Every structure is written in C-alpha cells, then in structure tokens.
Length: 382
Image (cartoon, rainbow, N blue to C red; front, side, top):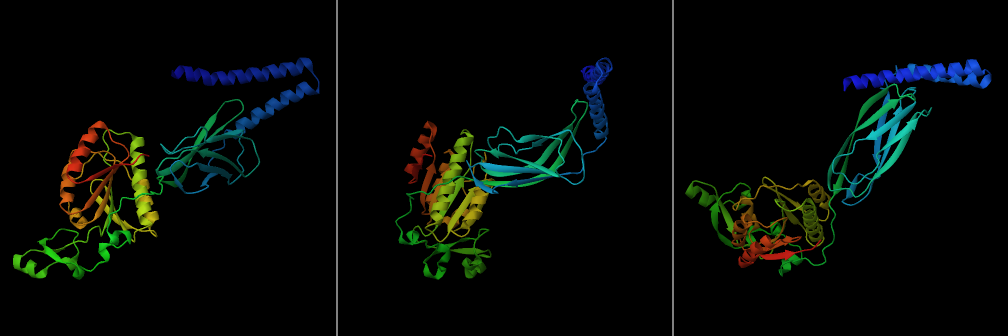
C-alpha cells in the first residue's frame, strides 16, 4: 500500500514533466505566438505552484454566526461561515468544511469550494433542518488548500467554538388535570402559607432539606435529636411536575415525545400558577421552582435532560415535602419499581396523575395495578 502511494506521488511529477515537454515540443514545431504563449503560461502556473507550496496558510481566521442562538426542536438553523485572511495568502483553491455536532439535524452540504481570489474575506451559508433538542457545540472548521495539478494538498483545522441551545418543542395543553381545590385554581402555593395558619399534625425526625422554621425545639431537646413539625396540608395546595426519564425499552423518538409532554405541562401550568415545582430524576431528584417570569430557565433544563436506566428509590426525603400536593408525574415507561414509589406518595395524601405518551401491553398491566392504588393514569398522544 505504501508503495502504491509513493508511485502515485511520483506519477504526478512524471505526468507534469510530460505535459511541459509536450507543450514545448508543440511550440518548437508549430511556432507562432499562440503556441509559445501556451508554453510560457504553463511554465508560469508551474512556477506559482512551487512558490505557493512554501506558504504555511496559518494566517486565516474563521467566524461562525447563526441567525438565532436558541431554537425549538424541529426548527431550521441557518449557519454562516466567514473566512478572513489577515495578510496576503495566495492559493489556487480552498475547500472549507464545517464540523457539525453529532445528532444536530438533517444536512446535506456544509462546505464550500473557493478558487483564487484577491478578496480579504470569503463566506458561505448552509442550513441544518429539523434540529434536535440539546446543547450542541460546534468546535472546528477544516480548510484544505491545493494546486491545479494536484501536486500537494495542505490541511488546516481552525478552532471556532460556538454553542446552540435547542429547546424541546411544546404545546399549550387545553385541558390540565388540576384538582378541584380553589387554592390550586388561584395559584396559591403552600410555600406562601404560614405554618401558624395550619393545624399541627405531629412531629417526626429531622430530614436534610427541612426548613429550620419547622423544627420543634422542645421535642428536639427532650429526645436529644432534631425533630420537625408536620402540619396538615391543604388539599392540592402545591403543584408539582415530576419528570421520570427512565428509559429501558422505548425508542429515542418516544423519549423525546415524553420530554415535550413534560415541557408542555410546565409551560401550561406556569401560565395559571404563581409557582410550579419541577422535579427531574437522574441519579437523584433535582428540584427547582418556576413561574411565568423564570420559564426560560426551566426550558434550558429540559433542553439538556437525558434519559437514564437508574430507577428511583421508594423512599426519599423529597416525598415529605409533597404532602397534600397535586403531582403531575410524567414518565417515559411504567415499570414495577414505580409501584413502591406510588404507594409511598399516596400515603402522603397527594393527588397523583401519571402521564404517558403511549403504553405497551406490559405497561397496561402495571397501569391497572397503579389505578388500584388510587393513581390516575392518563395517556396523552403526541
């Protein structure tokens, strides 16, 4: 193989020499202005090729710009590449190729070919259709320089890092399965209610994450450990959107549809609630609050969320704070481990609604067991 490439390289020079000899012979035997002009033209191009081959092509700068830095899944991204020459750099042709992030979208051509020009900068544009959700990072642009005879080709990679954030596609849900509590409809959050306005239900051991104002200091001193007051929660006084990205057998498209459904719940509820608590499972629960003003931050989180094969524990300190809440539980798949989680949550007197894009025959069996626990199962087609 190495001998083949060596023969190919030497063969170029042999063919070039034969071309020069043939043009010279033609000029000698034919004579006249045209034949000698052809001969000297070939010699000039050959001389320029040798001179250009000594240039390093390091003085190029690349700038990548987008028509918009934030898109939604399914949109079209317009990319513009500008190549600037800081000093005079001759070249016969330059091939530009942009490195696209993996799984960005659909694109047929993201490069261009430029021939000799005296312009200090050149540019071209291309489109990426049907972009996918995620945080996509563009890193490098490749420049390739060559001559007309194919004697050499130089390659230069220029770092040009840019980021495009693609939010999940979402829609306004016309029907939201809210509880019949007036406080939920008005958007009242239990975090805004004073503990003094509620009845004391009892005390329990302190769990990391409990509010300091809820600690019962008398009981803590008596039992020599921190004890937390538990209050009776108003029915449906909290609204929680819990997203479970567990994925084992479903397709990537099914997972993306589930992300869109969870995002639709968050955006729709944020329009009618003062605050919505969002919980996303990964290796642990990640919890934050969002509202109409901070909705963009929630969209950024859902743009970067990924699936997991790790199931959640049946007991978690977060579940205590959901006591009496209305929970919209959006999951990719129903599995046996969720039954234990739902049993714990139903003991917290929550209104639990589970939402899926679709259900398989195996999941329908689990759904029937969930309904026996008092959990409402809803299938929302995409």
